[in-house]
Image (cartoon, rainbow over all chains, first blue to last red):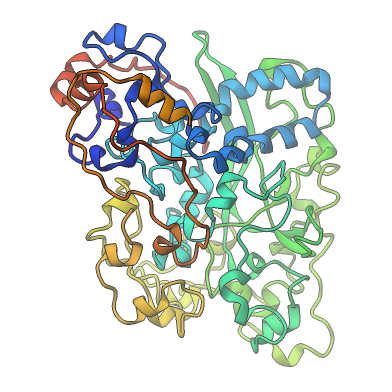
Length: 466
Length: 84
């Protein structure tokens, strides 16, 4: 999204803001300063973001949301959790200095979602200071969750379709509840701590695991592999990020390498909440020298955590090469995180997640093999299969990728955004695929499937007023 | 209580903008069928209290004035490379 002009960031809508319940509150009550004509005097002791201190800000009227002070979006505690695990207490001060320059712009207050855009994209009021109950995905969520989640969800990677949920016109908040965002009933130090939120089973209970009637689900159950192991595709992996400052003190980062890949490994987070043995793993860009600008040897316990981490790619597909054939995984080392895929310096760190070799197809299951029985990975129309495993784009110069992805007809990219602006925000790079009744079948997994199958009414009817 | 106290202390003789009283509180479950979280309760707001910060409102709703007063961003070259 393009940054807002300075005046755009602060303009209040004279027509719509007075309709907002917050308009009954004097500006200075929340923002400090003074209501006078002179700008400098008016902005003396100004509080630009009253939500930064919940107790005196939003929680003064919304006391039940005071708990959001401890939400991961507010505290960014997830960064601390992983960095401190790799470090020592005597290095924390330098690491915090690093974070202040390179990480904290993603710190999100109530206002950063409900009134303005996050600082990471330059801030500015979302809608003339009207308080938005449902933050627009393209202006808030993806402002911070951009290079991975956004690109994967929107289908920004050439040849890789967008997530089916995006094609079903679902936004982040359709799965990620406000309780999750606000940290209600959660006591976590990392986004993958504690109970899963959301879970596929919330909407897809009927097709999960034993009793689903789906052979692959019956066989694998719910604890051997995560849903994403079969239903996600290649995603971004980053190698070696280094942070530093220019001579003028401007913070910047350099990622040595990034690539699209898909690797199944052993679950580093295996517990009752995430019982899976195998999950997709994503390489994170931390390196033992990532923060060398801020001090020497700041990560002496670098190998305490793997560099290939539990991931939940937001590029879910109903049909993938994994669902097409058992042999896509079984006996196929190329889809697994084997030692030869791991940098020598990181082998120690990843001992707990790598797989020595792909599990073989158990005896007696040969009769249920479908698709490429000769053990090769499914090929595209050009006979190439590296489009899936590497950076090459998906096959087919004519744009028809159905031969690669199977019968998924939801790659239709026709535009249908009338009336969507209030929801989708001003991001003009969204995939505007129509909903796909034939993709969802009886659409037990689509929250508003009855509306979609009847032919969608206006977007206002679907999303209700914001 | 803090809000009510604040509003009481701001009584003044400047005219308030015409604010339409409207129910802005809605049940979030109506908007997101898949999200069953209830709308957060709020404390009482005195809807009859005068809005007195007219100067703030007048300036911040005046695009021309904001353009005139805007402090242009300093263009800073950030030599970052790769996905953030």
